[in-house]
Amino acid sequence: MMYLLRLAGTALLLALAGCLGPQAPFYPQVATTIPPVPPNQGRIYFYRDYEPYESLSRPYLYLNRQVVGISIPGGVFYRDVPPETYEVSVYSLGAFPNQFKTIAVKPGDVFYAKIQSLRSYNSGNGVFSPFEPDTLVVAIMDPNQARAELGNMRYVQAEEPALP
Image (cartoon, rainbow, N blue to C red; front, side):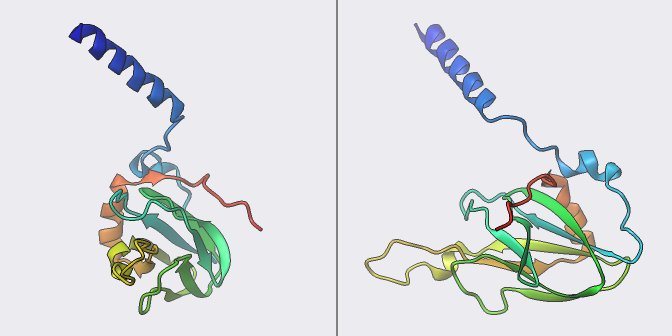
């Protein structure tokens, strides 16, 4: 009887895994296929740790208030941009001091914008309200640290928003 229950449980798990669809490849698997930064442009990588105990929301990411992608937990993508000063921001229900960053992109520059969830920042705001708004912030990371962190990320270049 236990054997049949285990077999049925295994079959159920395999069936559910099939429903998930194909997974995006890990960044190291595709890193060598990413083209170099185009001349007269800079590159901004956007990434976010997979933290299931934090927010799993998929908020829009913005450059100068224009949507450039969706923040995927455990995902990374990049955008090549012309030289300019950019405000890098993320849709966030909660507010945090200096939660968005400004960068000055020059030709050939590469920036790493890490989206961080601070779920507990707004917890306990109301005695009778269990709602904890997602508080997301942008951190511009040191390139060496960012490249090390990208090894655990899924490359989600195809995850582009339907623009309004």
